[in-house]
Amino acid sequence: MKDLAALDNTSNEAFKLLKQLNVHLEQEYKYQPKEKGLILIESTAENDNTICPKSRNAEVEDLWSLTNFYGFRMETFVLAVNILDRFLAIMKVKPKHLSCIGVCCFQLAARAVEEECNIPSTHDVIRISQCKCTASDIKRMEKIISEKLHFEFKATTALTFLHLYHTLVLCHSSERKEVINLDKLEAQLKACNCRLIFSKAKPSVLALCLLTLEVETLKSLELFEIALHVQKHSKVKDTDMLYWRELVSQCLADYSSPECSKPDHKKLVWIVSRRTAQNLHNSYYSVPELPTIPEYGFMKSESEDSCEDMSSGEDSLSSSPPSDLEVSFFFDDYKPKLKRRSRHLYPL
Image (cartoon, rainbow, N blue to C red; front, side, top):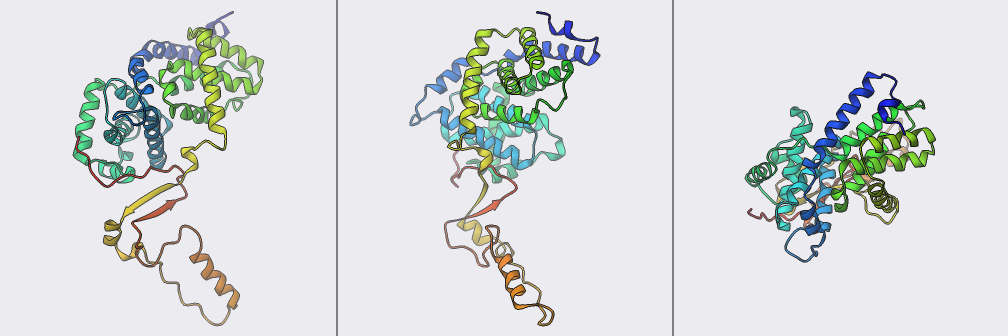
């Protein structure tokens, strides 16, 4: 079987892509979480006073909620998960500190990926995430994470390989470029990131599994042959591919089932404490007064319909402060839901 270089038609773009791929293949092991630490997390029961798979996966869903809320790129989310897993794999963490660590990982990833003007303040992230910590806690935890990871944040991740593989396939394919949907591949990678087990896979292997599974659904012989060349060039063993492809396929099947709880299918809920609600300005609760409707020129039914439209729907606010313990404001533009946080602070 010929390699990708033999398939290349002296394309300068393809040559640069292969060069980038070789660099990332050499560096990926540096940014992969320690397998020993991941195995220790996998074997931890939920009632133990340390991180278990369920709590880690829940924190990753919160990271996606934050990423989606601020409109950040997929790269920010994947990098935040990578930083989180690398830290958890080398440090024994108590569950009460996990939310603080998650916010720190999100902030570190955003600074490495996003434009500086778009990065939210620490106080804003604490409010949005309802993190059980203060700004000083975040600052101290960021220092700990940075030192433990040797300030290496711009990591080679599965998303890095997914983009490279996708571009390589399109570069060598004679078919239309719209055949392979990169957004779909990224969504599938996000589903895998929400499960701890895939942090044990090499990023290049995980990305290649997603690519080949998509090629299978397209039933394209040309794309399948190119994917095999990519596998050969990346030096991925068939045994590794078979093992991880089965796990990825099962994960995607479970994630697409209606029984699966997905972050994207939940509404973001802003929880306000009773004390905060009492201190809010009345304008937060009051509905603006409607202009006076003239008696002439309007039918009675039209007036009734107008009032009904303004008062109905889940987005309408009560005209007086609520007496319940909490108030929830739903933002329909953002589907993920941040989990409920306690108002108590826990010192680090």
